Image (cartoon, rainbow, N blue to C red):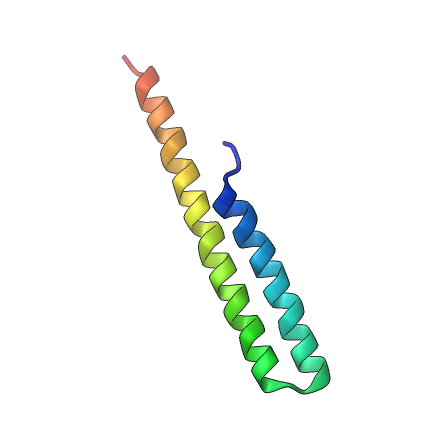
Length: 67
C-alpha cells in the first residue's frame, strides 16, 4: 500500500486543525476553536478519502494478477 497526495495533505490539515483548536482554547477564542475543529474534520475526511482511493488501487492491482 502506497501513500497518495490526499492522505498526506489530509493528515497535515488534520494536525494543523488540532493545533489551531488547542490555541483557540488556550486564548479563549471560540471562533478559533471552531475553525480548528473544522480544519481537523476536513483533514480527516480528506485523509480517509485518500485511504479509500489507495485501497481501491491496491484491489485493482490484485484483481489483475488473478487468473
